[in-house]
Image (cartoon, rainbow, N blue to C red; front, top):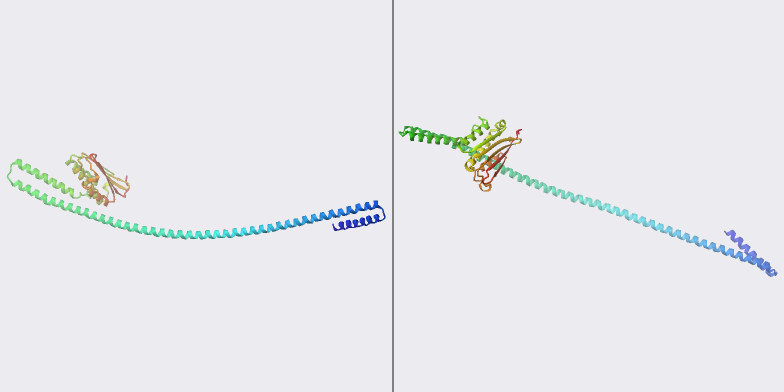
Length: 349
């Protein structure tokens, strides 16, 4: 580019000299020709100078733009780096906060769990203490019931002995003394029958007060004999069912005695209060429990009013002592159903 510029400048100078030289010698046509060439050279030099200026300016603008772009990119990179740094620090802060929150949460959970465990432990201790108190009271109630029932049994035996030995012996002596008196035969026979009836009643009362010989006879036959005896002395028709008899007869002696006393109480209440003509007694052994059912067609009663008065308290005490359940269904003039379940461990129906 510099070589070309120098050539054009030299050519312009030559054409200028020739232009001036021919003008001086009067050769105006030649002078005019060299003048046009000189002008053309100047124009070329001017155009090239202009092009160079434009190119230089474009290069300057391009360099400035590239520099600005580079500066922009640098600033942008710095901004991105600062943003990434902020994100990184923000991430660290958030992560640290989450760790701190997790530790605090775990610590709070631990404290709450510990407090809950302590509270639960206190509750369990209170419940155990309360249960111990209940068990002690239950044991005291059981001992009290056992003592009362034992006292009643002893009193029954004492009264039975008094009736049998005392009143029974006295009646026998009176009967012998009457035989020595001179009385009309009709009166003597009537008096003897009355004494026999009283003696029979005393023996019956004495026998009822004394437990039957459960050890010596099958329990099912003892119950059946007892119910037949009641049926013979009342207007009540009794239906009796027991199953399985071999399992019932193999029950423990104390349990059979309790069942017999419960049945006695039930039949006594029925005979005294129910005015029933039909009674059904069922003694069944199922898997895990013994069921005693007594149902009559009598006048019934209102449980809330008459429960204490109809002599069922002793039954309830015995059933409670045996850890059983005692249910009564009764309404006035609709009869009564008594259902008793007593736990039993043997394998049955």
